[in-house]
Image (cartoon, rainbow, N blue to C red; front, side):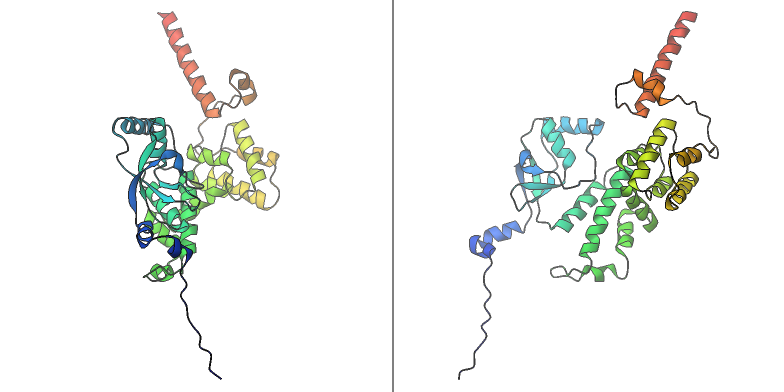
Length: 311
């Protein structure tokens, strides 16, 4: 009886069957082309804000006069169209300048590669908010961890490239931050949006914000309401105390008011006006900062009027 022989057949993939070698080579290479802005979607959970500021106005004017001088970076989506990797501000400027297309570099990137490139390219900005760093560092660190130990084509596994260092150490070296500072930034992602915005606005500094990030969301909401009504924010020592009461299950509105009313070291005396007395003078939803700015402007006008009367 003839001994059966195993036949090893390398069957072609669907991609090999329905595309030419030239098309496959083209897919793996990056190239530049003008793409309709309507075919480009934003990067999922993009952590960097696109603001209508003076720089944006300058970019809009430049795009309107000269077109897109610097190509954005995109990748093709499996479902069709493109996904923005770097260039969200340029896309917005193109839209507002009335442009239909924008020049783009099309690059073949995996999901984790896309996250890392997106974060690295945006960290080159001059001004980056704490919330932007927080979510960007978290996204990149998670992508690096997924890649660790995964062999690259014609290369060594990333775990070997780390040479005993943690992904957080590598990230810290890349962005010029200590491991502890990376950890602090990532903790900020646990804050509710209202408190995180206060960190961006420099109303709460990093260290107390990190302590507050350990509070459950419900307690953070109570804390935010207390800060708004009392027009104050906790010091680092107060934030530590608030976290301790929370861990013991003893934190409530009365405890928060008691802690927040404690005098801080070097505290500057402040005048406080109950928010309820001011609400009728402002549209619904006006922030405390906007109220303060309006009141100061009104007082300045009042002082000018009084001085003119004295003359």
